[in-house]
Image (cartoon, rainbow, N blue to C red; front, side, top):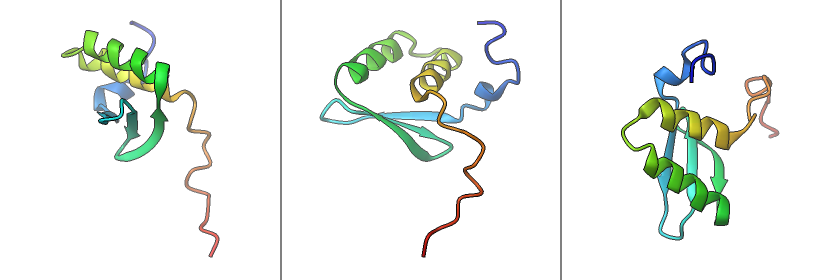
Length: 82
C-alpha cells in the first residue's frame, strides 16, 4: 500500500461508514454523507470491510475507493439558490 496515500490524508481517518438494517452502506466524509451503496455493491463493500476489521488504514482506503472521485474542487464555491 506504499505510494497510494502519499500525503497521509487517510491517517486522519476522514471517512466513516454506517450499515443500515436494509443492508445499505452510508459512507461519510468529514461528517457528511457522500455516497449511499445498495445491493451487490453494498454487500461486496461490507464483506471487504469485515475482512479489514481492525486495520484502519485499509478500511479508509476501501471507503475512499468506494466513494470514487466525488471531490472536484468546487465544493466551497457553490452558493445556495435562495
